[in-house]
Length: 214
Ligand code: DC
Image: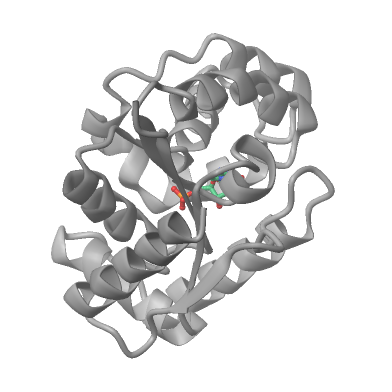
């Protein structure tokens, strides 16, 4: 039997990692898990239950009761508020521990899987076949996110979007628990000047090179 193909796609907000991961999953016929949705769902549940995102106990309880099915259909999770809440609850080690097994089970499906997030290559799937760390300048990432949100009617100033992206980068990379850093063996892909086709093509070539070197 051929070896499972596990692809880890990490990177900051609006770097293109989600789209690249989805395209790679479709290309290789693999299941895909957007792990950011798990943290977004925890953040929204904590707020919905009337707790603060700084309440580690409430956040861990929400993470332990998490059922991942259907999260990709939940429009509430795509808001800026959900992203901000996710980034805050993601700093609690108990939340990360509660979501670990679920993500590792997903990664170890027989044929393999594609997971995108912040700590896939470092913590969730350190033995992944291919590890990509997707980056882009903060301005370009803010512009992409701003276009997405305003296209669907949200009202937000570009400057606020940029400040939000920078604050999120700092929090995600600066936290003690599983900070956002490229794995030592990850390949960096900068999508600042790439459209989605070019970015996907570059990502596919990185995966092929990683497979060939195994
Ligand atoms: O990828 P995203 O924007 O949907 O993620 C939202 C937040 O969730 C992000 O700011 C940090 C957190 N997160 C994390 O800490 N680890 C992951 N594997 C995925 C997301």
